[in-house]
Length: 397
Ligand SMILES: *Cc1c(COP(=O)(O)O)cnc(C)c1O
Image (cartoon, rainbow, N blue to C red; front, side, top):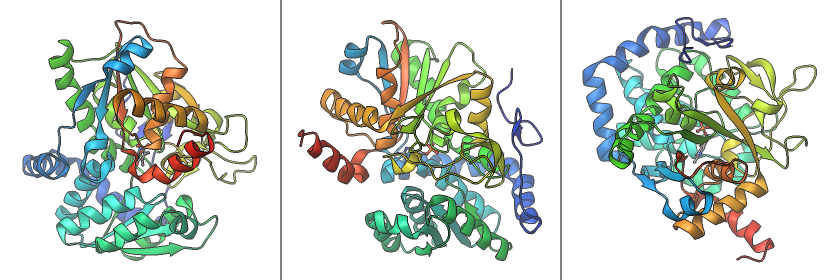
């Protein structure tokens, strides 16, 4: 079985490019050029150099001795939290800004929910001296002032979106609308492995540096270049796609995706898109979508702002439907407990998204000799308000 994208832009049944006529030229230009640009050695050299000197790659693969002791497996953490700007998202925005420049684009637009992708986009625009406009729902702007101010300090314009629930889905619609109006000079940096083909594949390729490094680092640690398990959290699915990428077709390696159950997968307050979603089109991609009987998109919920997207990258919809990846749903409470546990066992405060990946240890048993690599997608600084609120209620802080 081949779990990579096919030449038509599909992963099995999922993917494609379901876009309005007016966007066709933009997406087609990207589709025609992205592989040639990514394969160009000069592009590769510039990308690799920025990943090294600006992002701080390779990120360490850290053997977590006390966590391993507790759960009875050989657990390694891939430390994307140590990247510049604190998460894996910068790998993608660096790649896309270099691509935009090569395509002669001078204006960047992006959507953001919690603001993490907005900050990563504003960061690379400052780096390259490009104009940056970030669409963000009004509700999110009110909740995420620190990231709004970071984007503004970086020189980006944050445009409030007032339609719908005024959150990520609405911001994405607004960014797509902007792109329609400015096809010639604008590149749209999408923040995950979602959207119309070629975005899911392009973003997966930029994030694939994660598994490229894991391969090399495991040889040093374990004398073999593959683990028994890979574990990552899934919002849209970009850190998981990067973690799985070079192992997709290596069936010795079992893949585990952790999605956000919110208050529980059987409640209305959940973001477990794979478990609860049904087939449909969202933002140009045929995938699994949280929707009502008549196809209205349902607003997802998770304590973690980075995981509450109502869709899922088509790559993951396919991995789940083929049984290649095991999907576990981790609740708010399980994630909060896992975040505190990692902090106390290893001295690492993870992002709330990454804490969902860590929640897998509470649900699944591993054997002592099994090698488990888990990606810590980001650091917890941005989540301190939530941690303070929740742990105070529990009498821990
Ligand atoms: C945005 C974000 C995620 C979720 O996005 P994916 O595309 O699923 O990786 C996960 N972790 C962190 C730290 C994030 O900022």
